[in-house]
Length: 491
Image: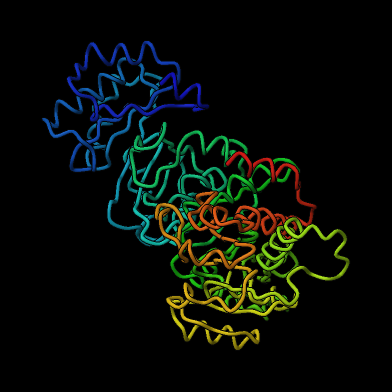
């Protein structure tokens, strides 16, 4: 409890059902007397997803004792709430509030069903109502946000699982009474529960309100993204009432259809949705249309239409150009790109691969696409007027020395950090190696490339530059570049 207070919590929940050798009369008195913060006392039975397997009457007696000892809140399950509340009329202090809760470990019901559930919870005489569901799709969370306004008493609601994470972060915006965070990794009381320090320091949850604009990163996977750390601090720097969250999305079109309100103002788009985003936007800028991939979507204020952009293109190519200029030390390049005339090998034919191939071709490079699926490599090569090879032939591909290599696949991304798309022996033919992966900061590909004498450009550099472009599209303001670089340096 003291640690929770230090980390910024306003209230703590004590899960008695997790305590071993618990002596109710002695231990409850100590917990409540010594509490540094208001307490919710919860004694969750197995039949409602908790750990308690003992006598039910004994369990409810402990909760009544907590009320007598002036607990701030007591959580009791809907199934037993009506009789329990009736039995506490002569014991209930003015201080103690009763939370009546319900937990669904399988799914998230319809809005209508959730509305009926809230009505049932209220009918018990609850001071506060609470329900948790399980999100099998990120769109499930939207139904939870819809029912916040249905309750006539304070309401707590969230969806567990990684797809439900945004329910814990965005609840203050939609009227939630409180949200839950853990004290750290492996200390969660529910799947997908965020850390308390992340809620406060990254998402600034205490500053969120009904007018807060929501931005976020759409991807699958998405948990590795550093975008929330970067953009939320940048929003704070310019004083913008906005939050940037991770959206674990399976179907992009479905996601954009459900989260269509002006509150959801813009999105970064990552693997595997960049190509699908082209079809999902109302309008796409010409460069992104040519590339065939969108990594940024902005909801236009005037009409709510979704406009697609690609900042990967400029972010990656400018980083590679600067890396080459540093290696070649030829002074003022004027309007000539150091990529001009060079053989530029792109690994991957997805959204990022298309951006790199298009950008390199525009700068005058000769482009080669290497991909596990040769047909996809061939299609992209035809699009940019380049050459295609199968990825399994890349190790022996060496028509000349001094080539440029750009990996745009997820090979080598955490947790598979020992994987690499190209052998160390083959890297000797390259002057510069770029890796779009930035978790870890130095991939095996980059480490081995540096060992054979190549200049290396980390995916972090592309990440910073494309993020600055996204920030400016999101906000209409110049990106705080120095701050964003400082943030990334600490990651």
